[in-house]
Image (tube, rainbow, N blue to C red; front, side, top):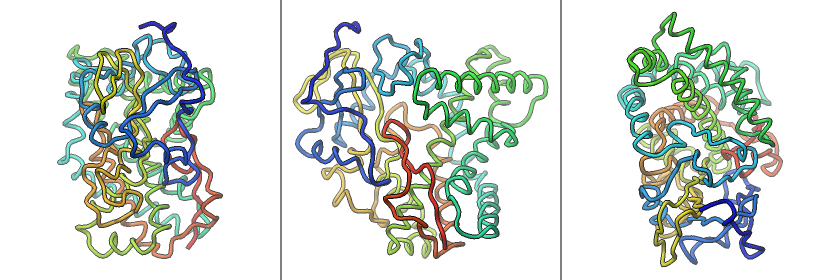
Length: 404
């Protein structure tokens, strides 16, 4: 398939992605895409038609199907966000490659993100969260919960895990924010270049002065032994650093906001420590920070009686899968006691989020401590005045003013 094969689908296929108007609810247009079929037709910014997968069962099956590709370097891989249209075939490790390369990269990192290692860092996470809450309480209301709490928790955690100096956090947080939120490809490229050069220098420094972070392990075990080259280590570091805080900051902020808007559910979080993981899983299902995943069909695939043809753009809607009435009773209701472990907030299949155990630990500790220490936490502005990120970004508030 070539780019000349693309045809605008016309007004019958609505534009995608769509912006949310409520921070934790799907965009209003999603209502018409639910229930009738497990897939629907949408149009990307460049006029390219795409299949939007909305069914929970169908989406899980497709995310595990090797006939769908995640290869960002393919010349006709779908471009959903205009700022990435000139990426020049650049394929990001882990998230933008297929097996066997993906499997090779993932095998190198899995031990560093296992449950045992994540449990080992819980005490330091708890200490970090307590310090941030001490600072918040000392300053007093009103506080932006994003900058004061939701951002530094995952940012500090991923720095500690990777061995990246947290003293540089203002720089790489700004680069990350500019990279994922850029309006143009030029802005995105500039932010990427700055972040790449920073990590390039950090990897070189660590080769001369080894530390004890994940990057140091990659250098010692993979780079020095020839399994990875310098560029690959830098790119893996970039993906982990950006993904390690960019999504979790939104999950913490949206989780806190959802609980503030459903105060009757907060006792479930506070009264029984054994219930905390379940509350977090329901928040991940209900808020769906990652709204969709992008794929391309490598072969014809039958989905719900419809043929998705080779070369077609496929967008798997995490939000609508997590709100599928065939998978969940009353899916639009936030129920802190719900068993939502089969949600797809972390994706599914071979590309399921590598850092999900870290994210769960951060969410459980952060939200549990937040509402324990500040039981009267509430929004300082009306809900409809909370500024939100665009539909093509990880979903969440830009700022979250709170008081108590």
